[in-house]
Image (cartoon, helix red, strand yellow):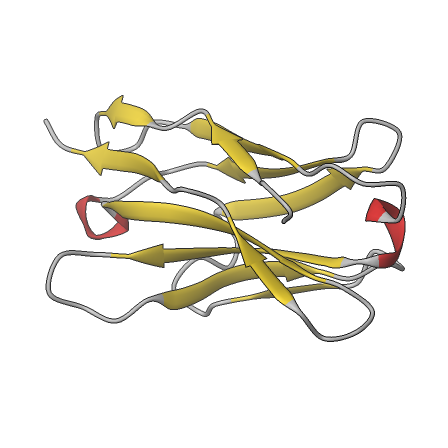
Length: 116
């Protein structure tokens, strides 16, 4: 069982920044696609950003230009830098790992609240 551990959530004012981190165990981290998803109250979970093993990235239109996903394979960690946060970014953010067999693993989630 792969256990992903997220950190970095919290309360921030509109226009502020946060950086989420997700640590993933295992010796094949660099081969896996990593992603961040979020789920707001009453809404379905949605993709925020994905980074593949070769560093290619994909973003939801709503976060383009504000969020940046990156990875440090030496630390088995993926990051989500979130700038210019808006109230509509409020959600539980989940780390996701898709391994080379297509299996998905999820973290426990970290709350991000954007409010004045």
